[in-house]
Image 1 (cartoon, rainbow, N blue to C red):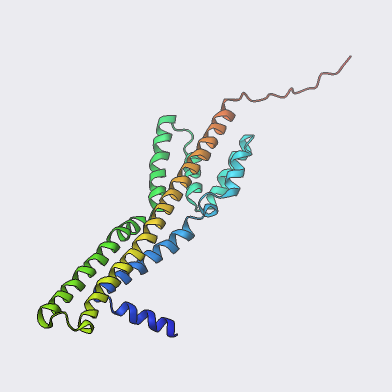
Image 2 (image 1 turned 90 degrees about the horizontal axis):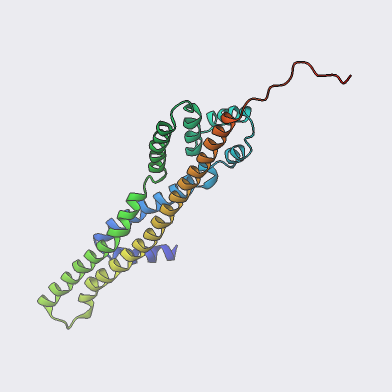
Length: 222
């Protein structure tokens, strides 16, 4: 309790810019927690669907994969379902359709990351603005009472230093989180593309295979 009280007293010395810095830190934390949950690999790229694609050997396996996709709402399942439902389209049209859907899914995966990038950029600047405001107060006090009373100057100096520290403390971790999640989205999109191409190749291969015709009557040895 004493620790929290001390933190509150420390931050309260930062002046009005501390309000905006704290709001930006809360928003950044909310986005980080949300993306940490939403960008789990198992949630986006269902391992069961991946195994189904790798084990496709005959047409009935394709129908089984379609039924599983109908029961899932993951980004990869949506792409698989779109591809399986439009297999009759020409290859160029199907590719364009999947690319368009892939861009939509990638945008959904990256939801909120733009705000992280913005916070990472403006938090240090807000801290710098707080520093400037604090130094203006210091010089204003100096112009009125001189430099003889250190206690009168400490408020402005504290405001100048605290906002800089807090701004950097928010900006640096937020930038790291932004880069991490961006690379995670890119990796997930590339993996989805890889398995989707594998699925379409297997479907094309199965359709190209001639049907095996079983003889009606077995030939008996004389």
